[in-house]
Image (cartoon, rainbow, N blue to C red; front, side, top):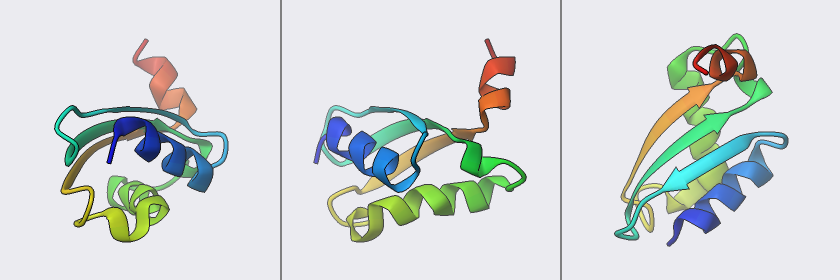
Length: 79
């Protein structure tokens, strides 16, 4: 598994999302996902949306995925 594949899967599952994924060992990754779909959702619900885009890869090919999930406004506020 690699970061580009994970980024592509998340972007496919959350159209319009901006996704940055890093991770060099092939099983542990970090992702920042900025998506309109997160508006009004608590962090756990946001994470579930991302995990759903990865399906059975979570806990298998992807051992760990640290997530930072933001709406576009939240991402802009941090700039």
